[in-house]
Structure formats: structure tokens, C-alpha cells
Length: 352
Image (cartoon, rainbow, N blue to C red; front, side, top):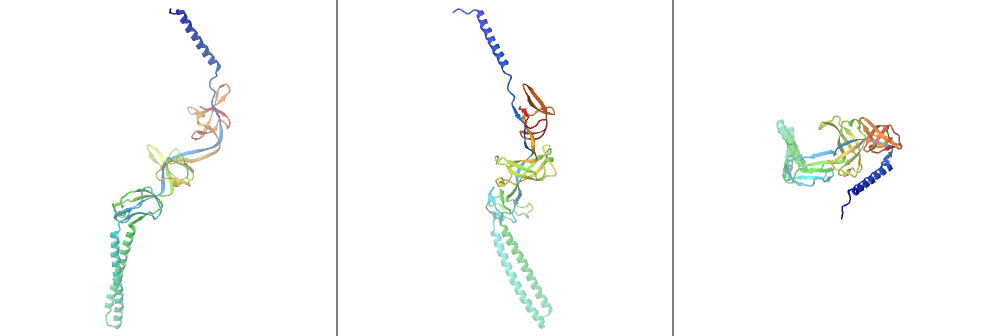
């Protein structure tokens, strides 16, 4: 086959360029560009929120320590158990105390017998002295024996009460209703009482769950807006689908430095009826409602434009470019922003 002339190849290329030019010309002339996406300015309620980040804590936390020394005989609870006030937690070996108590009971009985006979002797001594058969000194000695026997009874009685009380301490019971946070000992361990120099062996940590609160930190720039009594909504990682109601109950008077930033501790009482689901030491955030504005002018956050310190929105202007409207904003609540000046409810504005 003979090759085509070069003039024919040039003709084909020229035709292709002409077609491309026509297509480009048609596309540019028939489309004015994508339409602007807009939304309407709304009016409603908006809240100013201050976030406190912290953990769920019990109103009461008790460290249970023994009042007597001994050996742990049996532990009746485990970590996480719910207990009632007075419930048995732990038992300490009591054999030695029981034998000591029996000995003290016998000594008390003996002292009482001695006191009874001393009283009989005193009566006889009084009769002998009245009859002149014995001197007053004999009566004084009888009185002294009676007083000594009375003192011995008192001492023996005190010893008996002490051992009886100590025997009661061998049974460790819950001082309050709550949850067992941690059992710190094991069966067979030797333990020391709270009267020891070390403060005694820590047996069990209990948290009173009848009242829980969130201890959270608030940035110093926000703390001026927080007041006792303000409502709060508490969220936890463990119950991500549940919001617990609460109320600010306490604000620390002094801040604390954390990584060169000053925070103030805020205590938020959990008032929700479902608060029993929460457990101490759970992490959580509290949205503190510091201000509520009804009838606020509200726009989506993505309608705002920024130029330096200036904030503005864009309003459609027919076929021309959008018109700029300077605005002044108020409360920012996530994607919703309150506008104080510059636009009115119902105005159409451009989305970014």
C-alpha cells in the first residue's frame, strides 16, 4: 500500500482542532457556572455552653481499716459488689479473743464473789464494833477490803467489756451503703489496727453511691460564666447514648495550673433518676448551660466568612456576585451561631 500524502495528515489534524474549538466555545457560552447553595436565617432558642471535663465521683468514699490486729479469716465481697449499710465485709480470726473473753468473764465472776464476801465481812465488823468486841480499826479494815473488792470488780468488768468490743471488731461491716471499689487484702494476711503508727492496714475501699457528682475542670476564660445552680448535661464514654441531668453544686475558689493553663474545679451533682447506672471513676463531660436566649437570630456556622477581625455573610444578588453583609455574632453553640446585628430572620444567605 502506498503511504498517504503529508498534506492529507495536516488536513486531519486541522479538522480535529476545529472540532475541539467548537466544543469549547459551545460549553463556555451555554453555562453560567454552578448555582449558589443558600439557606434561610432562622429564629429560635440557643444556649451558651461551658464544658467541664472530669470524672464521676461518689459523695462519700470510705477506707475500711481494722480496729484490731489479727489474721484475715474470710472475705465476703469482691471488687464492684453493691453492699448495704451493716453488711458483712470481712472476718478476722477470733479464737484468741474468744478465749481471752472467757478468761475475763471468769475473772469478773471471781471479783464479784470476793466483793460479796467483803460486804458480808463488813456487816459483821459493824456489829462487833457496836457491841464493843472489836475496835474501830477493825471496821476500817473491813471497809477498805470492801472498797478494794469493788475496784477489782470494776476493773474486771472493764476488761470484759473491752474484749467483748474487740471481739465485735473481728466482724467488719459496711459503714454505709455503696459499692466496693477495691479489696486491698487477702485471706490469711496479717493486719494491723488503726491505732498503729502506720494508720492500720487498708482492707476495703467503699464508695457511697446514693449521691454521685462529676468533678470537672473549667478553663479560666470560661469560669466567670459558671454559677452554682446552673443546669448541666453529663455525658460519659460508657453510656454514649445517654445524657444525665445535673446541676452545678460547687465551684473551687482557687484555680490549679495544668500544663501552664489555669483551670477551676467544678462539682456537678448528678440529679438524673437513672444515675445508678453510673460508676465511680468513670470519665465524663458536663455541658453547663450558662445562658439561654429565646428568639435568637441563628445561622449555620458555615455561612460565616472572616477577613481579619471582620465577620460577614454573603447574600445572593440576582445574576451578580453575592452581596457582603457585616455581622456581629453572640453565642456559638456547635454548628449554630447567634447573630446580633447585620441580618434578620428569613434572609437568604450563601453557604460555604
